[in-house]
Image (cartoon, rainbow, N blue to C red; front, side, top):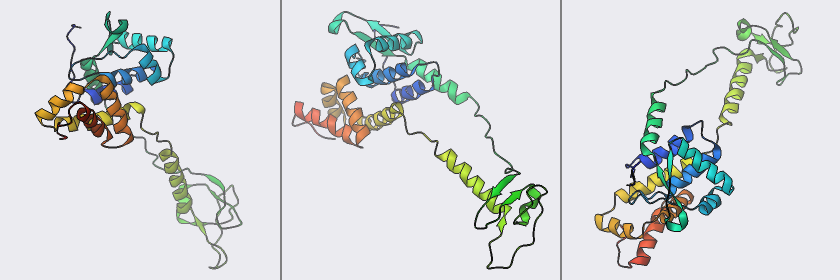
Length: 263
């Protein structure tokens, strides 16, 4: 890779966060470090040189794990690690935007797995107790249109329904409906919350969209204060509160030039 920084396109940064999540061979530490590095990358200047101490503090892992993670990213060609003598002998990092695009393209070309749908309910359900003191046993789906009450548990025999007011008959449709609701509820409860990587990607998308809507004069004012630290602080603020990242950036501009416009 050339010494000149490879700058990302408008959609490359959120795409990179998504690509990191899709690389199965990547360790969890490497995914966290990659997300932090991308957050520190300056899309206008290409500067990206967070120190090892910064990566340790932001990721919560040891120095050895940070070094192993950056080496892993470099070996896989996802984030190139460039050593130089400036800035206290820090390494400079260059995300491989082309590689991230290839990962997303390959993922989107894959055919989705066929959805598995249970076409029939369980054919047997023992000892079902609802509002009756007696239990019922469902032996075949053909019994679904009959009212079941106090069966023998083996042959699936059905007794005549009792007069109204004595007890409520339990139908197979009622039992099957309860089973389906139970299965759907169990599946919905397994949904996991958004990951840190996807939250950072969403925050940066909002900030980048706002930056693109500004006037050239305002963008020039922002360029004068823009650093990787400002970018990361804006992303964190935007994650906490919608619009807070924009306010943080404009506050930094106001400190530098009180007469700078806010939009």
